Length: 51
Image (cartoon, rainbow, N blue to C red; front, side, top):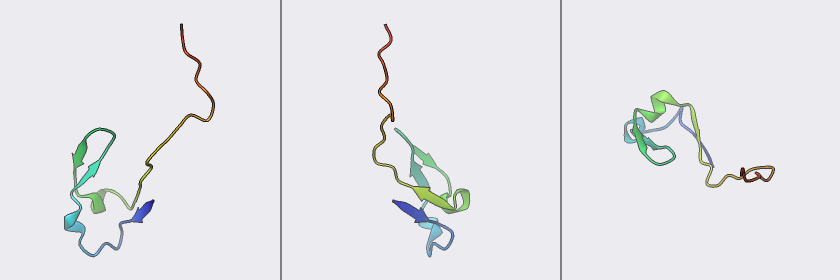
């Protein structure tokens, strides 16, 4: 999902964003134009186990 933030009606409501395992406090609409939600990722090629 992609959310455009340039014309948000109430930008003051967006004051933090979730990163991998924490929340970062900042004015989201001033810092970013667009935010993308990527719920799951995976490797394109299998990763071999190192021994």
